Length: 206
Image (tube, rainbow, N blue to C red; front, side):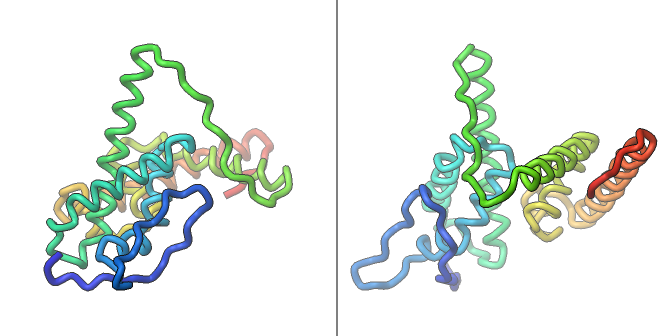
């Protein structure tokens, strides 16, 4: 990885996560290990938001890092590392979804997705959180695919517009324009939802 100075800061690792690669005998941290530690949480959350089930999450994340390890020597612009990693995660998840659709079409039995790891919250907290998540994704469903994609990348994955443009292979001005239209469409969808709730005498939580 020519010209690359990698940060070796450790990321928090969840219980049950695949083990991080071991350091060399000399105690030096390899470039891949630095990337693994620094970007594990980013990859994990990105893969989950891209729709991978909890049952498959660890396997898909591990596959992302296998690809990163195999292609690390092709990276020549360290400043673009995060967008490069996200692009790999996005393509890996796309392959996962294609594979799953093939299995579904062939009549393979689908495992019920296990619930997320328990959090110390009250039943009311969980109901409110579920309602908010359902609202978010119902509003996102009202956006067309190009707008929904850039909106999620910017607002949920916190990617910059230049990173989005690089990942989607868009001109920078097009990426800015698409995100602006996506945000406007999302606000309109939220306003329509609020109007429906108010018209029905309900209360809208944002």
